[in-house]
Image 1 (cartoon, one colour):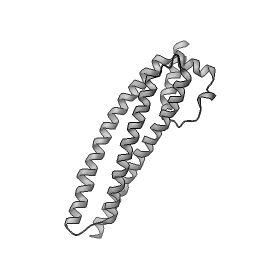
Image 2 (cartoon, rainbow, N blue to C red):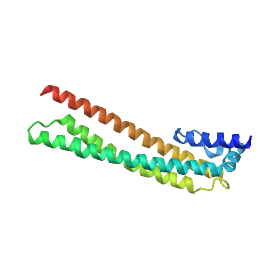
Image 3 (cartoon, helix red, strand yellow):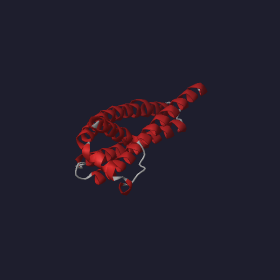
Image 4 (cartoon, rainbow, N blue to C red):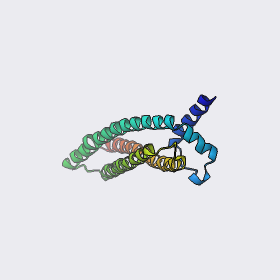
Length: 169
C-alpha cells in the first residue's frame, strides 16, 4: 500500500508540473506535505529526469529555430530584396519570429534556473518551500509552452505568407 501511495504521489507531482499554478503553500494540507516528504527521493528522481529531457528538447528546438531563421527566413528576405521583390509581410514575420525566439530562449533559461532551484530544495525536511517553488516552476514552464506555441503559429503564418506571395508572382 505504501508503494502504491508513493507511486501516485510521484505521478501526480510530475504530471502536474506542467499544470498552471492554483494553490499557495498556505493552502496545502499537512497530509499533502507529508506525502511530499515521504516521497521526496522519487520526486527528486522524476524532476532530474524531467530536467534532462527538457534540456534535450531545448537544444533540439533551439537548433531548429536557428536553422529556420538563418537559412529560410533571412535568406529568403535577402534574396527577395536583391531582386526588388521585397515583401513587408515576410519581413514582419521574420522579425516576429526572431523576437519570439529570443523570448523563448530567455524564458527557457528562467524556467531551467527555477527547476534547478526546485531540485536543490530538500523536500523531505521542507515540503512547504518545495511546493512553493514547484508552483513557481510550473508557471515558468507554462510561459515556455506558450512561447513554443506562438513560435509554431508564426511559422504557420510565415508559410501562408510565402504561398500567397508565390501565387501573386
